[in-house]
Amino acid sequence: MKKIILTEGEMNNIEFRDLNLSTLLQIHDGNSGKHQKGEIYLRINKDAELIADFSVDQNDSTKDYYTQIYQNYFFTFGKEHKSLLIEKAKFGKAFTLSSVGVGIIGDKDAAVEVRITDYMMEWGYDAPPNDSTRQYFSNVQYTVQVKAGDLVESFSFYSAEIKDDFTFDDENFRIQIMSDQYKDSYCLLEMKVVQAP
Image 1 (tube, rainbow, N blue to C red):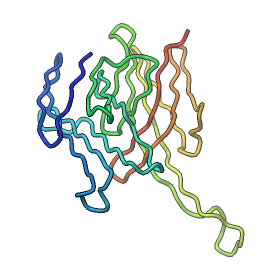
Image 2 (image 1 turned 180 degrees about the vertical axis):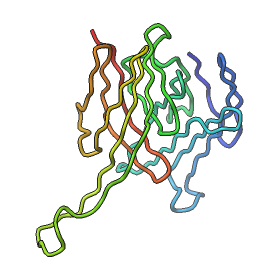
Image 3 (image 1 turned 180 degrees about the horizontal axis):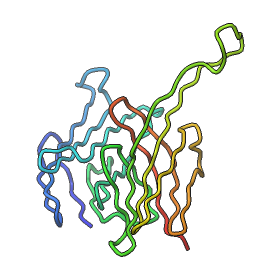
Image 4 (image 1 turned 60 degrees about the vertical axis):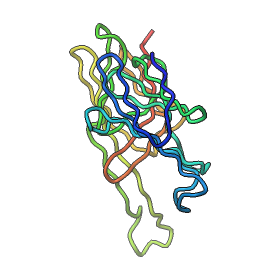
């Protein structure tokens, strides 16, 4: 585990185990544009490739994700102290998985690998145009692939199904999906992976 205090506006170079990272922390305050006021942005690169980014909006209606996974590492952004905590990914801790990455939780003997293999926004109306009670809907369908040893399984679900205790199980693990965020070019799933008793 390594905790790094970040310096605003400066590139921080970090070496941790097999990772060579650079970070950039930007804080938008009263001197920033109106659309940026109250935002904190942290970008983490590995060999000039974006591997994690945190965008914290002081607007209470926006969901902020403070722990993200990259390969078998958790990156947790501490916005109060402007710090970054890097640790090995472990079972039982909530994290965010991006559609552009792979997460590996646990040791190599009992590791679970998760990735988002597909996501698609669906929208429209639930009835023909002449029905006065028709309602507009939008929903995102996700497919998550889980690999544990030689076993590979895929699970598909809709964002409307995600509630406080939306889970799917295998004999070796349980994955709880807690929330989602859909963008045109990527998506995020907040989840927790727990080993089966």
